[in-house]
Length: 115
Length: 114
Image (cartoon, rainbow over all chains, first blue to last red; front, side):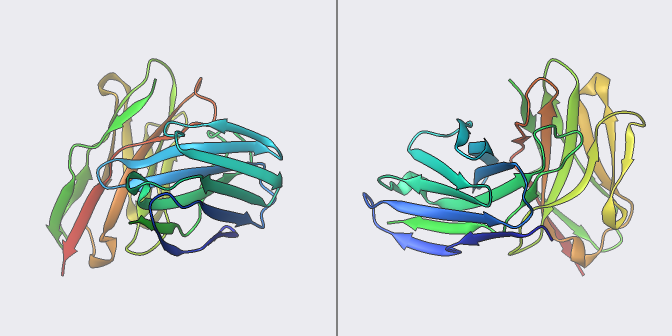
């Protein structure tokens, strides 16, 4: 398995509170991604990073921000959590952005519940 | 824009039955195609991928998929399923001009009865 850890693995929080999820990798891969998984929607890309301090938006970025100050860490922040952000969040990594040569490896996921 | 449809949301099979899960994509150009599997309580793992060449792709655990360009399809097959194949299966597409963006289908939940 690729060396990807996510913390916390489970979190329950209340509407309006800030939440930060952490993804940590030991593979030294350049690209890192945050997805959310919801029933019937598969995985949807929130944000991704193509290097330290280099990030871009994905399909469902509203309400989320990210930061990457080190190659190994990619943080996802919900500034003010809402119930619609209750989901399972997956981090993924890839060596490069050219997916026909490099697959994305996924972390174990974080289950977030916003009450 | 690229999109993926998986029409079978839930499939129930008995052990030894044959499996075919449908995947259709929408993209106006060359694509890379993937099937991922998520076993209960686990993270996504790559089953197989198609980039170019032979449209029949073989993956791990006896799975295969066939890319039919004229039908925009990439169906997943296995001749004889096992109880351990119980999982959720996701098809994903990456258009060559979409950079590193992967778009996933909604998933198919497979239950194999022993």
